[in-house]
Amino acid sequence: MTTLSAGPAAKAGRELPRPAEQRWPGLATAPHSPVRAWVAERLFRHAVRDLPVRVLLAGGERLGAGGPGTPVMRVLRPRDFFHRLGADAKIGFGESYMAGDWTASELADLLTPFAARMSRLIPKPLQALRHWVERTQPVAEKNTVDGARENIHRHYDLSNELFSLFLDPSMTYSAAWFAADGEDLELAQHRKIDGILDYAGVGQGTRLLEIGTGWGALAIRAAQRGAEVTSLTISPEQKQLAEQRIAAAGLSERITVRLQDYRQAEGGYDAVVSVEMIEAVGREFWPVYFSTLNRLTRPGGRVAIQAITMPHDRMLATAAGYTWIHKYIFPGGICPSLESIGRNVREDTELTGAGRRPLGPHYARTLRLWRERFLANWPRVEQLGFDRTFRRMWEFYLAYSEAGFRSGYLNVWQIALSRKG
Image (cartoon, rainbow, N blue to C red; front, side, top):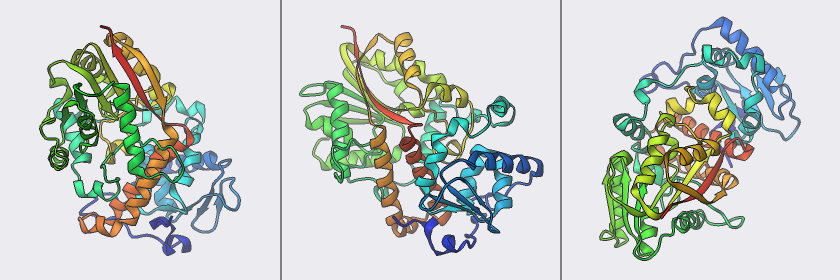
C-alpha cells in the first residue's frame, strides 16, 4: 500500500507542507517549552531504544533497535517534534504527524510496537506524575444529553459522502467478522451483524430496539429477518441517509428511525442491540446506559452489544486523560474494560451473561481495509473540501486504531445478555 507518508518527499527526508492556519489555527507552529522538550526527548530516546523500529532524525542520527525491513520513522523537524511531545505527549505525537514533523514508511506497522508497549513506554517512577501534568477531558465534552449530541455531531456529521468513500456498500462503521483470507468486507460486515442479531434472538415478529443507528445496515438486516425495528440516533446526517437506505430496501413500514437520545427512550422490547456505541457513553454514564438497556428489555428478553475494550488497569489509569483521539476524533469517548462491563451489568441490571466472542484481529483487518480505501479515494475526498492535514489526521486515526488491535492493547467483543423472565 502506498501512503502519503511513503511518498518522494518522505523518502528523501524533505519537509512536508505545514497546516493552513485558517483551517487549523495554531497547529503549524509548535509550542515553545524548552525544559519539557528536553525531558520529552530523553523519554522518547529511552522508549525507542529497544523497539523494533528505526527512527531517523534530521541530520542523520538513528535511534531504535530495528534492523533492515523494520518500519522507519523519519523525524523531519526534531525541534518541533520534541516541543510538541513536551507540551503534551498524548496530543503532541499525533499533532506532530498532522503537521508533518514526522512521517513513516508504513504507519500502522510503525505504531504497532508503540501500542504493544503502551504501559511501559514511560518509566514507572514517572508514571506517578501523570496526574500532575496531563490534561483532563473538558467539562464541555461530557456526555450529557446536549453534550453527547455535540460530540457525535463533530464526528458522524462530517459528511455522509466521506464515510461512503472508505466504508463498504453496507455503510457499516464497526468491526467486521471475517471467515477467510481475502473475504469481501461487506460479506464480513453482514456476518458481524448476523452474529449480534443471533445473540439477541432476532427473528420473525421480534420487537427490536437498536441504540445507535449508524447508516441503517443492522436495522435493514433485522427487518429482513421479520423484526419490527425502532432505531435511535442523535446524528441528523445519519438519520437522513439511513431513512433513504431503508426506503430503497422497501422496509420503511418495518423500521422507525428516531432522532432521540437512548436515555429518553420508552417502551418495552423483546430485544435491544447496541453496536460500538458504549464507547461514546462516558464512564460516569455507564450505569445509566446499562440500566436503560435493562429497563427497555422485557422480562425474558435479550440484549446484545458490541464493545471495544481495553485492559482494566489501563482504563483506570487513563480514564480522565485528554488525548489526541478526544481532541480530533471522538470527543468524550472512553473504551470500557470487560471487568467494568461485568460490574455494571451486575450492579445496574437484572441481566445475566449468555455468551461472548472476541473479534480484535478482525477489527485490525477492517481498519486496514478502511485506510486503504480512504487513501485510494483521496482525490474524491479532497473534492469534498477536506485538505491534506485532514488526510494525515484521518490516516493517523485509522492506523493508530489498527495498531491498537494488532498489538492486543485493544479488543472488541460481541456480548449476549438475557433478562430474567
